[in-house]
Image 1 (cartoon, one colour):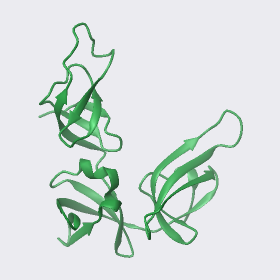
Image 2: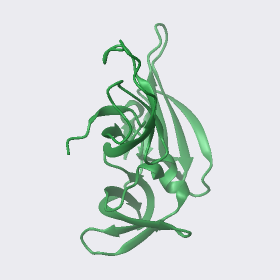
Image 3: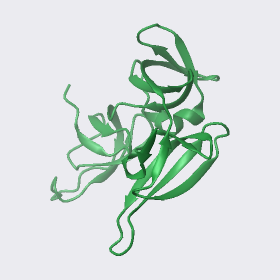
Image 4: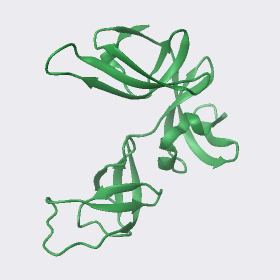
Length: 188
């Protein structure tokens, strides 16, 4: 099915030169002068090669038909990441290259959406937000207000992010899984 390039998002599956590819990142660029373009990085599913592509925002791109199914993350071992289908209880193992940098946000029993193309898992979509604990952060400087600045913090999954001054070690916070940015303090 052909779609306009500017409507594509991260995680979508597209067909480029007869090969399936998953979109790793996408950006719509609107220069002050000239034609707006959509720039995207894709990873070919067949061989894992990353390719940078650029389209006019009105260009038509072939979007592959994929079936999205809800799965629950179970565990990770040497074979990969193991998920269970929530309806049929079938188990699926995904390799680290399909999960990518999202692996650090996977939590036990987290519900994710796995995209299947002809029965083969090709991409994964995590929930937009995750609750994590702050393991380490700098002390607050006296006189620093909440609106003025953020300070670095290390989360329980090993990811570094910026948090408001009132957040201390041991605090649970909500972060965006797309980029690890702070959203709010978790409501227990």
